[in-house]
Length: 122
Image (tube, rainbow, N blue to C red; front, side, top):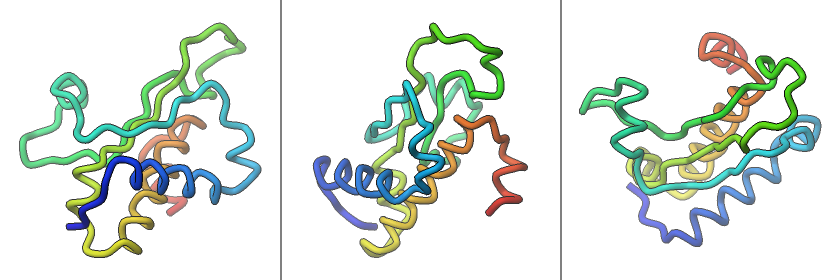
């Protein structure tokens, strides 16, 4: 487990976002990218997570592939969950990699990819 403060975690998210491929990062619009310590009970229930399951990140919104030209939508949200991510790694370098992987995964959902498609790309 890596212990890190809130500001440092946010800084790692910001740094990671800056390393995403430019062609993908530049097209992310109207999306709040933030972090919370843990998923809310409502988020866990919505995803039907068992007590032994954890969640590193969550995309909430309307994927680009499903918008059908709609432009007046609430902002989408990508949330990274600090405590589960930090608990899953043993070093700062592993932490950075897990943040990168989680952020990329959630951005892929924004672009409309499902889990099967994401895993094929990985």
